[in-house]
Image (cartoon, rainbow, N blue to C red):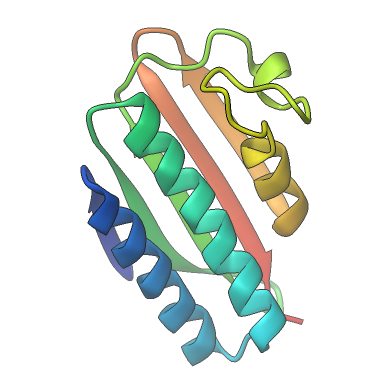
Length: 133
């Protein structure tokens, strides 16, 4: 996979950098302002999870293509503790950090495709795509 941009998430500035890079890529691709905001918000949530739950990780941004469609593909990777119970993590209102519990379910609603792989003790990979309409 050719990555357009890869942003290390080890500090809060990494969250900001990833969000800005995603917004710029989606704007260059022709996404409207609403979808640019959705993509930036999804990136913020994914990057914030990396920052809160692991020592560090990466947000990769790329152009996704299928048939006659293009989209923004975001891959959030870390080698942190992983997610013990994916079902709980994907339930609205569930939080292991006293937050609102809207993070991962919210990201799934904002994007068109959502895939999560997590293994306790080995880390998590979340892949999301927003297609250009």
